[in-house]
Length: 170
Image (cartoon, rainbow, N blue to C red; front, side, top):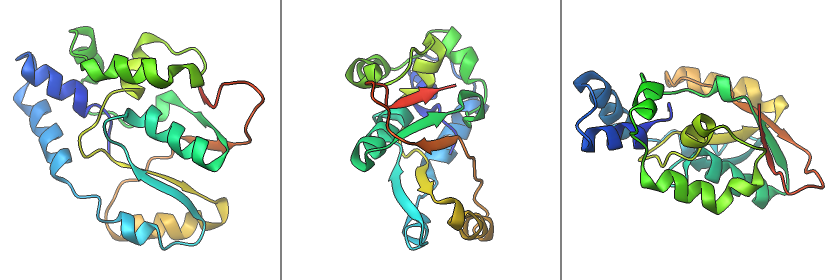
């Protein structure tokens, strides 16, 4: 699911969101993640978690630390709800975003303010973050396609490095 629910929810509280953008967020929050139980049965799925209050960055960090790996994320590949950058420019940033960054930002390379805001945005019923071996990608893609679920690859799992940086954002 695209990121930005926390930002749009904050825009709604500040009465700055358009009805179309808010409706998009509500529809996304109402979409179930029940496909997760089927994804988990695919051999080669190494980790699966839903992205919620810790934002994408926090949940990816938990996966990496639990698996003793690193990750590289291509920021420009992240799926985003419509007009998110405009709402960020208007100051529609949840308080939890900065708290999230303060908790785990030191595990990332230096982020821009925009990257921090998007990656640490707390989600309500966000998408599923899944790590899949290369050998299982075809089965994974076929399952999602058969359920009409959009897939977005955002990065790669990497070997851990010797520094504190667990996740690198490009």
